[in-house]
Length: 194
Image 1 (cartoon, rainbow, N blue to C red):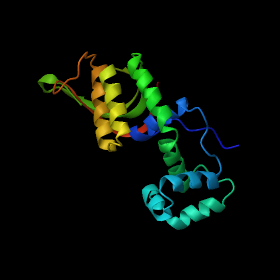
Image 2: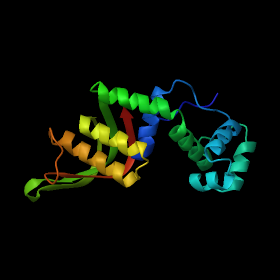
Image 3: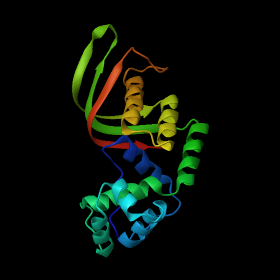
Image 4: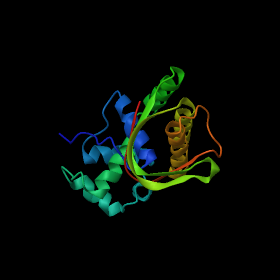
């Protein structure tokens, strides 16, 4: 039996995908061969395109197919797992997001990263390592879900999360445009709960 799914991540994209995994109604394929078959189906059967998307070589994918129990530390195995989590049960993901948004749902974020800010009147705090758990406000939850549905780049997701953290950290009730700017750098742990 494979080890349990790791729920934390170092990117906003992956952390959202891993939080969505809590809403799955079925488990994804477990064996390397079944996982690769699923990913190849999504890649239209083009192994070269799949290898490029995973940032690995086609030869490494062949090697993974031959391994019975790949190591969880193997970078190719990790790339396959990230893509499986990203692609598995998209309708369930959308349904969960819609239910959360329509029922005034909450989203908690827990992270350890370098967080700094520049506040009104020029005061600032240089980024320093912080470990925080905060509840995100509604407009930011919708922005994160919308951006993730259209596969927004990590930089955009990180900006939305930084704005959301600023709203929580400074107890703002509406999105700010220039009052406080939060910078989120060098994330080494990030987990969403919803």
